[in-house]
Image 1: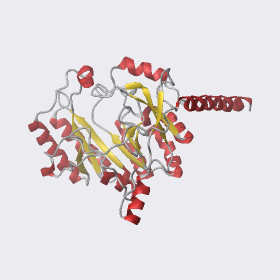
Image 2: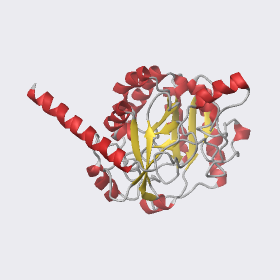
Image 3: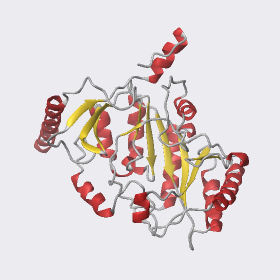
Length: 356
């Protein structure tokens, strides 16, 4: 009993500290910055929150907010409210959903719509040293599909690269085995080919991009294999060259995809993608770069393994920040958030969405 009281006291003390910090630093609370009306939160573009930081994430859900540093201006901090009336959907992108499985029921009960992208490749520990056995991940994928529904989960098989071990034939055989196993548990698989971003070149110097001929030949075969198992292929940031073979090249996180997962229309503001080849719609990521402990060699989000290990030491699941805490000179701004569901309802009633 004494230990429980002590633990509760520690939690309350930490909560009071963070509350005081936020009040003190929210001098720009009424000056939102960033995109207007952000109501889709993402947990997997900068790191893998479901795999490594699920306790932190659920603490953020229960306390109702998260503090996120701008990766290009560390003193600029955004506060995001995490409430069902302000967050239309939470996007999860992970290589290991297992730590989040015990929390799905709570997210459902709290009223959070979810959209899951689970990456399962055929690479071994030489490429993905921190990823659990793929058979475990496939089993978790099926469990997750049962919990959220197959309209809200997709399989990612990417990025695809070739070398002496991971040949085109290797990918065809592995993809066929996986497609058969996941058939019926999802309707879509997202594929993409490796892009040599600066961090990728540094961490995986021997990686080589596929030629256009290789992309076309392998992509065409994967489309056919997936179709035989009642799975449709979507491409991610690859342009339209595979559309003629049956791929959906419209993007992997589009308004139509969000609406299908949500089961209702949303009134999306106008948006210009940051990359011409990417048709994905805006969301706001609450993660931090150089914090994913899968240590995949092709990763674009980790600078190097030393930075990841250092950031892991600085992680506190009680903190509103994924990595560390407040710093001198921080400027905290409140993100502008307004449900697009409400805007869609207004549009239906009045003929015009009320977005801003």
